[in-house]
Image 1: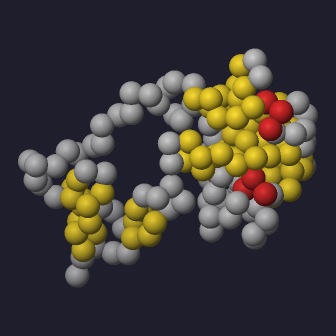
Image 2 (image 1 turned 180 degrees about the horizontal axis):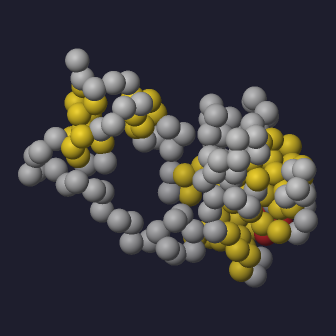
Image 3 (image 1 turned 30 degrees about the vertical axis):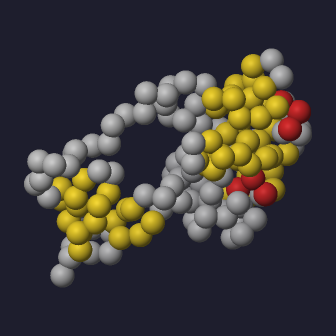
Amino acid sequence: MGATLHFAERLVWQSKCCYLTQHGKFAVYEAERLMPDSTHHSEPSPDPTADQWIDVAAVDAVPEAGAIEVVVKGEVIALFRCDGQLFALDGLCAHQGGPVAQGTLGKTDGGNPCVTCPWHGWQYELETGIQTINRQPLQRVFPVRQQGDRIEVQLV
């Protein structure tokens, strides 16, 4: 038998298993179907601040060839500086939620900056979030910029 879950302000019917992603949202192994109910919205309301730049840290808080972890509106974000450039990735590893900011910085065979998760060795390109073995974009990336002596990100 299936289960009924409340998800993103809607009722969802699941016929198989579901699990919690690193973003705190349910994902499923089988297709999901919205249950008809006029009292629930089919999609969550868009965040009007999603395209705004958010101040997250001082520039000198992120050392060259280093990283820090910040929490912005409930999102754990790993900020990296590599070769003078800033990068922002989801701070929880797509594999099992390891602390990406505590990982080891390096370069891929192609010379792209990457981080290796300290828990199980999963490796992601900093610019794209692509996992270096299967070449899939598994790690969410965020736009990041330096404004004066501050670092800003967008949660898009």
